[in-house]
Length: 226
Image (cartoon, rainbow, N blue to C red; front, side, top):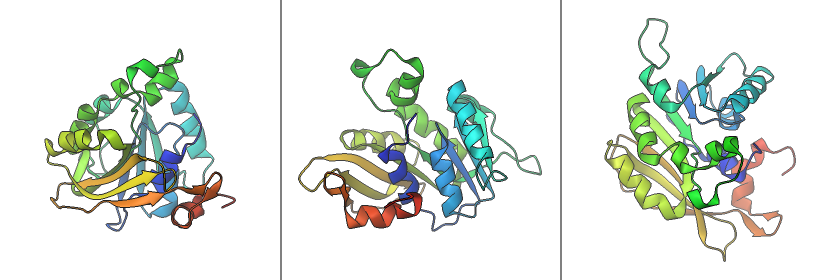
């Protein structure tokens, strides 16, 4: 899978002020989110899970070739199986993650392709939102953060699913391609703490291939040329 703007946005924006000691990346694909968070944080343990065999193998290779390979682990697993049997720490206690990130599948069924691995990576029925937040609520530390990027049009639905598991939005950013286009994505950070965040706006481009200053400032540490 190619690295998309969604992953770059999520990896660069995800809140880390609480300095998480452990991170979980659900549906990691190439491992891009885990690698970005390894660059941004001092987390001693960064676990990633990927259900597709080929993607898992690519992720493992990317981790091994990175400068943070001693902190990165990739599991070939579904989120349900991983939640049922999560890793344990040095004293045998099940790990609760200080930060969980996910760039979940979201396309509707009518847009499916003939490629099953691509369907798994990109379509919501491979990882239903209600199933995702249910698993996150079990794996997240009581003081942890869950960060996600989703289509703007399903924001209310996703927030509603999360609230049923006592996960509440603490920060929201609405993403637009340009100033004159519609909002396309929502970046949301959840925790078990209730709050009433005021959404802010992020515009990616001033015009075609000319990035906005706010997008450059957010993502420049992850591009070779920006």
